[in-house]
Image (cartoon, rainbow, N blue to C red; front, side, top):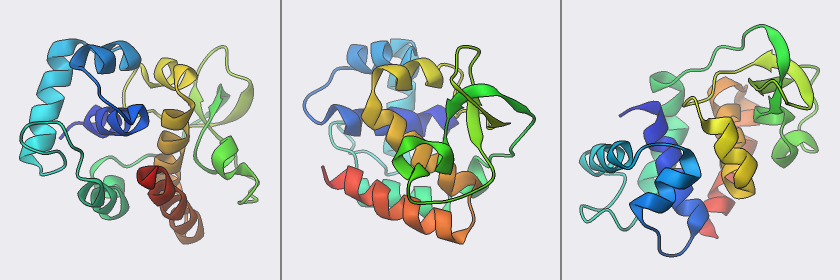
Length: 164
């Protein structure tokens, strides 16, 4: 698995209905060949059906909850400008009070905080076009860097997004 494989699966879930590889490619700014390779890796990992049409939501949730932080850990870096993520993002901001702010680095961002590297380079451009994807990726960052309380709240909210 590569970090953007998780993003590809989340993008599929954000699209809800039918999708094509070109839809994923355009929405994530990833080449169609890389989308195809990503789906193959996810099928081997048991996170999407062999025909690559159905994301196995419970398997993906378990991977996110128990494996993501170990496989793709996030280490907050220097203070910078960017797009709010983790508990600083709108999806969690009202539910978790913290002195720390986290952002994905982005020169045109409207927030300041410790930088968290996104799962793939074009992630900021993708979330600016897809609010549901933004929320899910911010929740995932909360799982990657948060304490137990933040992780639990993020998992509860992520499960709701998966049920939509």
